[in-house]
Length: 281
Image (cartoon, rainbow, N blue to C red; front, side, top):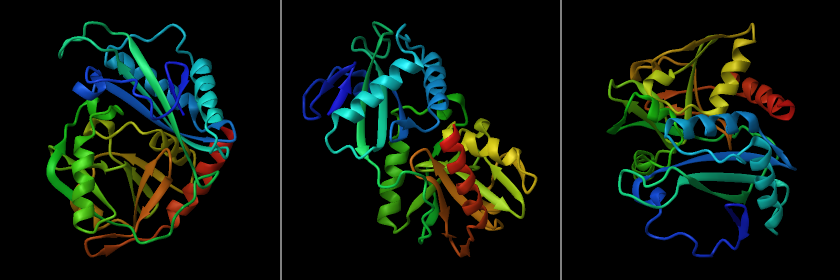
């Protein structure tokens, strides 16, 4: 079952057509959200990011699109799915309504909420082989639109195909200045000694929720120093650790890039602190 504009609908219902602007132009945003036993992890951060992104894309925000309303709709959708175990991965999609070509006829929006079952209640650090490589066929633009979680993910799709064809678990994306920006499915963090470093939003990386939470956590710790700055491909092979973050998996350590192999000590430490923040947040 899915939620389309507040109505619970069977997931095989045909309720969109060829005029959908998300399909035609990628005129849509989405949030991937973790929900455990009725608690939406970092819900305020997700909501505020969605509202800010809708304003940037000049979408009309409905008067009833409050944090409380959308929370209610998310939980209603989870409850409507009989496979619900209390652990849900939620995808909330907002798209501009039909009409017009590049120029929309209207700015009003619709939304869809869909859910799938999660395996674990909290973030679990997977200590498995996880090799990455640079994806250099195409580049991310270093601008504000790249910070948004829009439906325009063709670069991520092509990069994922490349990774599969070449036996990698993930790829790292570059911007036009050849700086490392992020992974295919999340933000990138680099550890060197006690320095925790991640690319700046000015480099074009996604304004990720877990990225934001980890920055907040690290800045409060005496054990680490933090830097938000460009990362060159050359730096990757001098790092002690690399890991990828997103709102569903939390932290995924990278074990190998080319001939360099990495540890995961800091990733383990931060994963524990992230789970604490998720319970309290």
